[in-house]
Image (cartoon, rainbow, N blue to C red; front, side, top):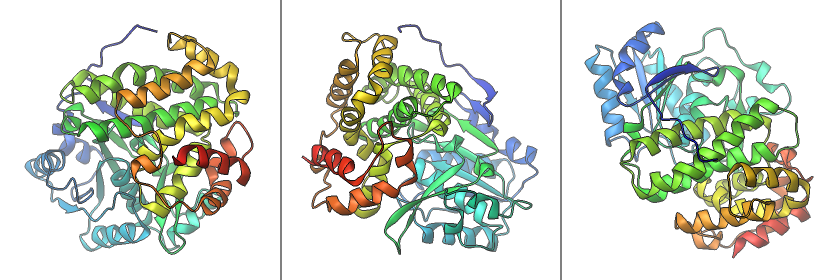
Length: 388
């Protein structure tokens, strides 16, 4: 499909309130006041704290008369200790608002910090299993404004956080319906400085959400429609955003596609994430890049179960070979265009304990959404194909 709609400044809710457009970061003080808040804690990661997006955020908040502090103790794969430290900073500073800015790691940690600030139970008791979320105390939740600086996880529109449980060396999905931020500011200007390799890897993360949601066997036609359009936007705009990081139209379209991917994933995820989570926990590797490497091997493993879906996707994307095989070929070509590695070894993940990763993958919450039932043997097959 070749049509496009220009990304223009606008407000929408789906259901989160989103303020999209260049320069919208200047509205932060007004948004904070609308939420009844005056003492924000800005949460980000150490690598971003001195860069323009965070400094512009602090400037906007402080220039608007708000008593603002910064917490930047978030690792690329955030840990329970990071969240605990953030909760201490929030409580000791008397903060009444979390302003989350960064990629998925910073946003996930910030949402968890806001949730846990009013809890008396351990965070791990809110793992996304069964009705664990009902254990949370929700009468005094700290509001969150989320500002994505990458177009990848879409965590700004999500109801969960992926946090590494260091004692158990595994990633835990912490879930609560009210973890969804109160307001999202999507300002493409804040993503302009993102290096091309990170733009590519995070963009592939967004694609993994949309693809896995689309292929998941559960019935959710609304999420499926959002997933399809997210894939279309990524196909059109990710190469442009990677090639020319100053292209604000491409940056804005990718922010939108990333958010759409997150909305779609409520339909389900699958083997890409079931394997990326343990690999990330064990090897401290970039989540988006793991998904980029695993993607075609998972699609090939699932191919017989999703042939009709991928055939339709090939036609929807107007691929030269509009078939399931053509979709997988497009993924390989896209990785080549973006100069991303094709194997786990190529991204520096070596000495993999395949049996351990496969066992961990079978119990990952995402495994249940795979089109083909996953067992250790199946995950081992995928890992061996991806290992290199």
